[in-house]
Length: 550
Image (cartoon, rainbow, N blue to C red; front, side, top):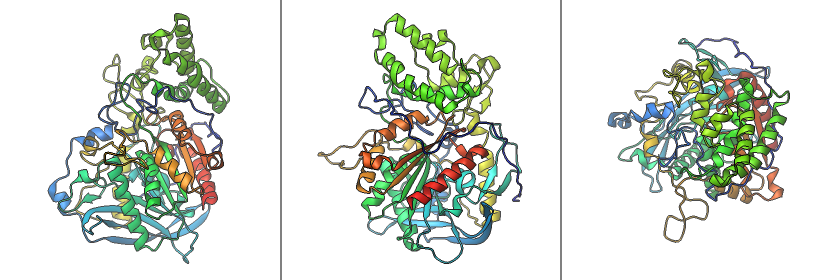
């Protein structure tokens, strides 16, 4: 049953910073490895060092399952399209729209069917408008289905959660999304192969799609197929990815350009573009976390000061983290006792952990330790996707969190709501299992990436870990009209915003093109839309971006 309600999530009393303000110049890393030991959105590469949390709850659950042969065999080779008609009210205006839940058959260069990609599309009814955009949206993982951006961010219906508390049990509240993007663009939500209802076909193995470049190719084929059968080649086009979906988007925009399809805009929600090196010994990841740690300390009133102007305060923290703190870490064991003590004291003031604890950690605070330590006196752990959420460890003396309350607190609501909307709202049924996180994908993921100009052969290079920021930088130089919007949650520890700023500062853009990049910051976590007030602000910012990028 679909329940209609106007219930809203309680506001936290924090306001978003100006969406279009450029951040300060982030630090230059001491190593060419990029942002070293950078945490991944959902699952890090297999060679991740000790500062990276090894697995999210979504990835852990998916790793214990496998796609059965019968599940693959029942995936449709012939494309399916189930249409239905609805209305949604956005900005006080009623918009009639057509929903299409179906599949796209992906074929290799020889025409062989290799995969069935599930999608849900929403198109506004009315006379055909050549200027009407189409937006392709997806989640990350790698190996996650698109249910979160679909039912939380941009779709015409969304599920209400009790964030930042754990959401109640079913029945869940599904209501019109008055902040949907359907007033600005037609929307297409795509599931990665092996996730959702998307499946490999025939004798094609899932591993043919489970890698940085393989995944980009699959999404490029899926988008080309949708554009072709729906006659949208001359429509403005946008990519809207979340988490690892931003890694995908940065590579995908370049791949599509190489296939003759220019994109108007790329929206990056909770970004990671350069995975860099995940070996221990690199210090820049510690730097990238400090502003997010500081924002969290302020939120939980653990900071030495409670600033009246949070954006200005975080500017100060950025400057210290990229200056004195980075300098201190770079010195390693050669740091003087005086500088060591001063650094520990200042870091404590910003992030709320005791000076002695920071000294014992050698000035380097792992994310897992921060999540466990900040509220230890209250017997609580913090969320990873969103540090506004709290949970309880069975052992309050433990060094690491046992789970991520910002994941477990909303997962069931999203999965249940999506099933209800697909079946009861859109009339789409299938014998396939819907996989929110594709079984085995994280473990099989090929993290190697061939950047623009690279070559799989002996004369080129293939990076051992992806840096698709290179791809997006090339795409923006080749298409100087391409616009990019980076959207960031202040309490997101999966993809901390200071690390995102570093990645984007290393697109190596000419000053004439740098103005094509804008930033937004919101008082929420990885899934900014869990805070309904933040969602409203973000929608207004995104609407302006569409107007500017069309």
